[in-house]
Length: 122
Image 1 (tube, rainbow, N blue to C red):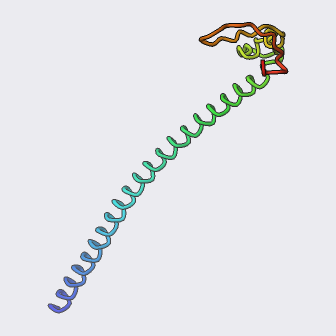
Image 2 (tube, rainbow, N blue to C red; image 1 turned 180 degrees about the vertical axis):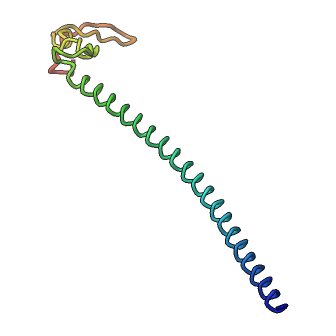
């Protein structure tokens, strides 16, 4: 019977060693899974931040498009954007179209010459 007791002791020690190894493997796997979950959580936060930035940029783009469209349509009656100072100017400056006198001045003399804008020779 002494051999049986020894075999039983060896078997129980072997079973205990196998159980301890499995337990250690389980602990290792749990630690690995916890770290992996932490990494995934971090990545998810980064993705959420990027999506928020994208959403903000899309809103800015839409706002800029609306402002652009308002500027394109500012001649319409419904526009809330006032016309630019260029549009407020008259389309032609009458002074440029009128015939008149041109002052020719040098150090020696000053004279007036009747000129036409069509003929620039003076």
